[in-house]
Length: 446
Image 1 (tube, rainbow, N blue to C red):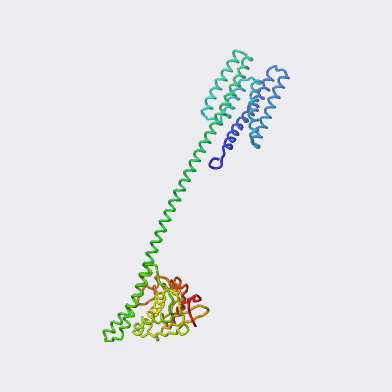
Image 2 (tube, one colour):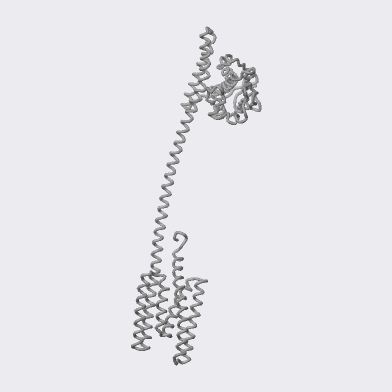
């Protein structure tokens, strides 16, 4: 099968069909010429009526046979009709020359038939055969002029045999060229298919390599982004104890030695952040059961100085979860609560028109631990709530924070505690962040 769906058999039959088509068309024309010549000669020369009718019947019969074969080849083509058509052509030409014995019939028959038959050969071959036919016709004309009718008839017959042999050789040569062209086309097709397969293989290998390189780059970028995120989060968390340390130092300078304990707590928080970061980098964080209320109170103690200095009140309603314990990293839970408290603290610092209050509550409902942190700050717009948990979001008026607190809260709730965080807010009224922990598998006693 050649490219494009062409087969060797189709090409061969198509070329044979063209040859038969031209030969049969020429045969019909020659039969008409022979019939006209025979009728004219019968009128001009004393020819026995029987011979005249015999020649006319044969000529007309082969004319009808040629037309029938031509019609069958056109509408009902098959290999059998091809063979019948070639036999009809050869036999008809012989009878036309033998019965007509005229130079005009021989000339028209030889020249036009060889043109049609040479369709399956090359133009160079057709040119050579045409020269032979022209010379043959000249020889026939000379022999008829000098030697009379019997010798010219014999020479006509001999030349017809030679012509049929040459015609056969031309057809054979033409089909050989078809086979050669087909084999060459097959060779090209096979070579092209091999090149395509090799190209597909190379493209696939290159694509795989690019994909692997891309995956490695993605991994590197994600690692670098995670490192950057951790760095920002650490800076965010370190700011809180540093602020407490700064306030405590100021108070110590004012000879208030009682604030030394706050300074120690701030240093403990810094050490906790450093230890947590080290565990995170090593990839071996420590998890255990921890007291929820005690951890929340520790977070409040860490920012107590900042709350007092900013004249912000804080209310704790944790009696309903006083015995609840969670399993996980206590330092992560502490950071979650601390981030929420710091966000409320920063928001309330800009609110000077009302009593500033942070409310922290807890309860257990349907097997879930609910912890809420609420402030009466300026609140949030609906569009702000949608982007509240994005990494780069910040609605702080001071501009000193990265807005990473709530993003960390959401990520830690999902990754560490398999929980979730919800935000509820009303403009110029309040903002409430609710933490939901699934505690069916955790230890609690109520």
